[in-house]
Every structure is written in C-alpha cells, then in structure tokens.
Image (cartoon, rainbow, N blue to C red; front, side, top):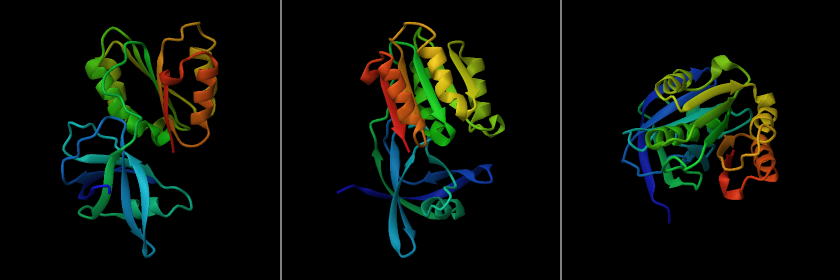
Amino acid sequence: MAVEYEARVARIVEHAPDTRSLFLRGPRLAFRPGQFISCLLPVGGETLIRPYSIASSPEEDDLEVCLNLVPGGLASPHLLRLPVGAAVRFTGPWGTFVLDRAPEAEAVFIADGTGVAPIRPMLRRALATATRHPLRLLYGAADPERLLYRAELEALARQHTGFRFEHVPSARLRDEVARRWVDGDADRCRRFFICGVGEIVPALRDLLRRAGYERRAVQYEKW
C-alpha cells in the first residue's frame, strides 16, 4: 500500500488568474527530477486522486506543484481555492519520466503550457551536471507573456553558454520540431524530453521516432 503524506500549503504564487503554484511543506520527500505526486482531494463527498508533477528540485525544502484551471474539472478548482495553511494529502513520488544527470548527447526539452513543470527540475539537474553537450528548451505557449518561470529560464540562458531557451506558439510546436531536428540535419543522437497536455505529446513522440530517433531517446509525459 502506498505511503500517505500530509503537507500544508506554505506559500502560493499566482502566475496568472487561472494558474498557480502551491508550495507544500511537510515531510521531506525523496524524489527524482520529473516525478509527480498523487493528491488525495476531498471533493463532493468523495476522494479524488489526481497526479501533479513536482515543479521544484529535490534539494528544496518545499514541494512545488504548478497547475491551471481545467474547464469543467473538479480537482483543479478545489486546489486553486486552497488558502495558505490548508492541508493536502498525497502519495508518491511516482513516474519514470525522470532525469538524474545530463545525457552524453545534445538534450532537447520540449514543453507545452504547464508541461514545463516537470521539465524545470530536469533542466536544472541537466545544467548542474552538463558536460560539453548543448541543452535546449523549446517552450510552446499561446502568449509569450504567460510563460511560466520565464525570468528564471532567461537567467539560466545568460548564465550557461551551452543552454538555449526559445518560445514558439503552441500551434507551431510540431512544425518547429520537424524543421529543426528532423529536416534540419541527419543527426539522430539527440535525447528528447517532452511534456504537455493532449495530442501534441504523442504527435511529437511519433514524429521523432519515425524520423529515426531511438525509442529510448524520446522520453515523454502526457497529461
């Protein structure tokens, strides 16, 4: 049986009216960059179980989960209404979409919307352990002004000469990936880490694998 933990909301950061980060303070959880927790949420007289990626790094004291309002959903409105001090029960960590150190090849991170949440600690770990291979983040969002962690990502790009961060509109994400890493050259040694909501994730996975990248070289998480 999964071990159940309880934490308290220590801090709330509002990224946009419908998007927030909750910082959960409780027992120190040992996890790998990219993993998630399963929140146990009392909604409507029952307990809903919903996964939320951990947006913070294992070295930090608080667990950060970043979420936005899902139209018609039950779990996200509940979490977005929680005040500082509220209790949150969860199990975990879970998931195999992880990165413990930078690959021995060029690494390309592709995030769409809030899919940047697990990418963030993975990217931090990659930068901390990177050697001579470049690191890239292609971030898809409809509005560049609403990029999550934009200031942090821009600062990392200034600090690390081997890291490049770019935004593209979500609608162009597949075309950009095809242009840069499928049609752009014959190199098939890169490693990809993809996360987002909906069909864009399997579309990118299939695009890259059909182009000749090994299955294990294309890791992904679909919400």
